[in-house]
Image 1 (cartoon, rainbow, N blue to C red):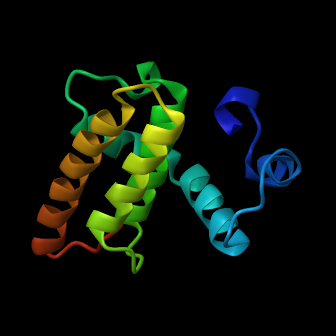
Image 2: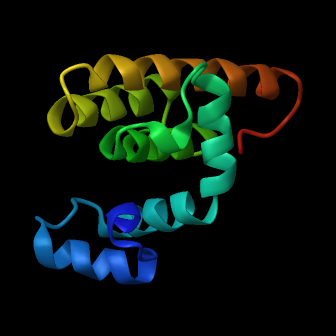
Length: 128
């Protein structure tokens, strides 16, 4: 929504509430939206690193934003296990994206999880 409308989280969060069913966890929703927004450059860099031969800005809008959310959940050090974050993103892709979005999202987020695991094993924190 923010990409399409050119607005930030402070405008998008209330607008989403007017146009959609309320999220099951509004606090987490707001935290995730703001977290993705605040870290979008680092997140896009991570997605670009994982998505060989794909430029982030050329990805389908829905896929790109699902990837951003998934990369955020993988990278912020939350309690969400990698497999759960990836599966949730894949399901969003299947529901809202194109026919092959689920597989596309799965492949890129799996690569991101590999990149992050290497950083973690090297002593880096689980954060973009």
